[in-house]
Length: 107
Image (tube, rainbow, N blue to C red; front, side, top):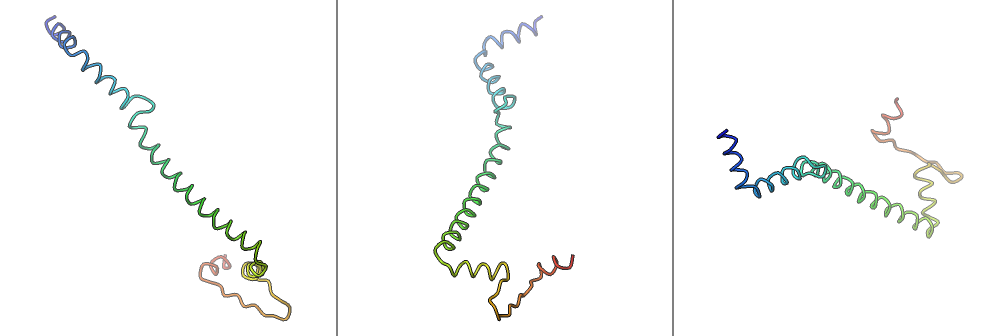
């Protein structure tokens, strides 16, 4: 009984400290929003923010191209000639294939 009594006395003397330690343990480790669970969420948020920045950059580039196409008729011709290999009558077009494109054609 003396061990139980000594533990009881220790708990009575340090009840506030023990309460704070138990709450810190629950919040820090056991809780759904604990410090251990926050780190992966923080990494995911950082990754999503980088994706958002990437998509904003792509959007700005596409918006710039659209504005150029709407304002400049020669830009439409340039894109049609480069991307779709279109040509004017009585004109020859030579397409140079890079290494990456050669691999696609061989398959």
